[in-house]
Every structure is written in C-alpha cells, then in structure tokens.
Length: 105
Image 1 (cartoon, one colour):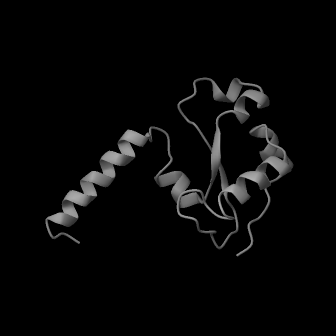
Image 2 (image 1 turned 90 degrees about the vertical axis):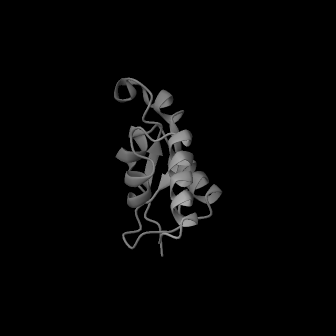
Image 3 (image 1 turned 180 degrees about the vertical axis):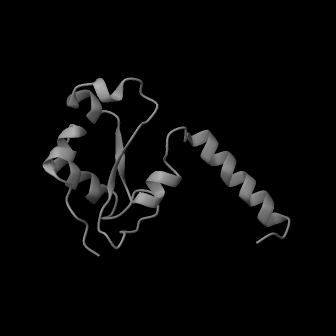
C-alpha cells in the first residue's frame, strides 16, 4: 500500500516540511507508528500531543515540537486521542491481560 503525502496546508499546520514528514515515515518503517499498517486510503495522520494548552494559537515552529509521529485514523482516534497517556494505556493493557488470564476471550 502506498502512503499518500499530506497537503502543504496540513504540513504547515504542524510546522513540518515534506522532508520532515518523510523522515518520520521512514523512522516508523513506512506505516502507522502504532500498528505499523497502512490503511487502504493511504492516509496517515500527523499525531501530536493533545495535552499542550493553546496548541492552535501557537506558531508552527512551536506546534512542530508537539508532533509525535504518524498514525492511521483508527490508532489516532482510538489509542492516541485526547486524554491518552502512557499510564492510561498501560493500565488498559493490564486490564485486558487480567481478563485473558481469567479465561476470557
């Protein structure tokens, strides 16, 4: 599957150049930073830290510092959404592991 490059407008919104975006994609092995896949649409979203206050009002150079990577729509909206923290994700994994140890699933 081919990953589609983002528009110049999208890149500018996050303070990235196309070279920056391609560097992130390469670092992630060519796919989503979470699941590794590439959706049928070929679109990977630019994921950023949602906990930064006033992100929308910051200049692009500051927004760039908040970019974490690229993610498919599903991983971006389910796993990386506003409020997601490493602690919460670890707690969710522990919760699921407890369920599986009890013979669930």
